Amino acid sequence: MSLPLTKILNPSDLEHEEMQFPLALLEKTADKLHQAGVLDPLPVEWRRWEYGQALRALLKAGPNPRVLEVGGSTSLFAPTVIGSGLCSTFRQMECQEWISNQGAVDKLFKQIHSVAPEKVAYPHFSLGSTFEGVFDFIACISVIENLPYDGNKEGIWHDGHTFMREFVRGLVKLLAPNGVLFLTSDLKAEQPDNAHWHWMRPPGIWTPKNWFHLGEDLISTEQMEWVMADVDFGWTGHEISPGWGYTFASAALRRLP
Image (tube, rainbow, N blue to C red; front, side):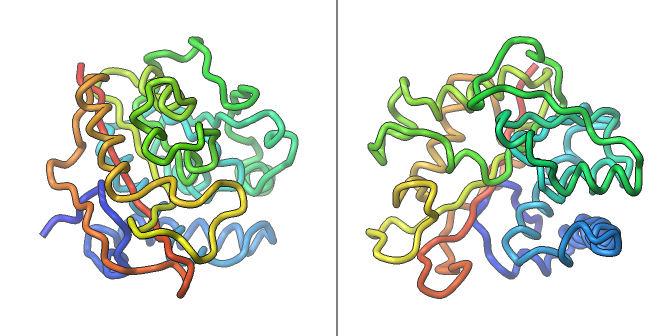
């Protein structure tokens, strides 16, 4: 049975045969970083799941894709993609304040590849038109849950004036025809959250319901489709740490020509 690219994390996903190739690439890159003194060994379960899903989605973007990673200055995704020869070009878009802090990606490429991936800075994540229609693959891994929103949990996606809605639609504009947008985010169950939550955001932003609506809205308004027809929004009850009340979700959509 195929493993969906749009789904909620289940620990058993890491044992799926379709995850073994991307996980092997991640492990190889993590070992290089660790030997260079840049990064700890292969990251925790949920990061391996996110990066593994991202690499699987990248392989659906066609040969020699032009790749943009949004918000990944210390991500393991960039060195894995570039070091494995899975792209023709690789750019990172960061908030300017983050760019000022040299991340693991820069250090890796100084020591192993001698050149860092090109970075495109937009202050406060605002998007310009310079790169519209340019990229075959865009990865936005655990970023959108940290963006501003209007304080209304339902309004986070359904209110057309929210910053987050415009941000995601802005990413779609950067995709070339047939380009793939891959997103991940923290996700929690529908019940009220009385446990730990990320300090950067208020509780209860993404749930299975509005994560599904995010994708459905893009499909109906932005000429997108699910990269794989099989999607899975079933909550497994898994938490990344007991009592924390949340896990992660991924979504992969393709821009129609």
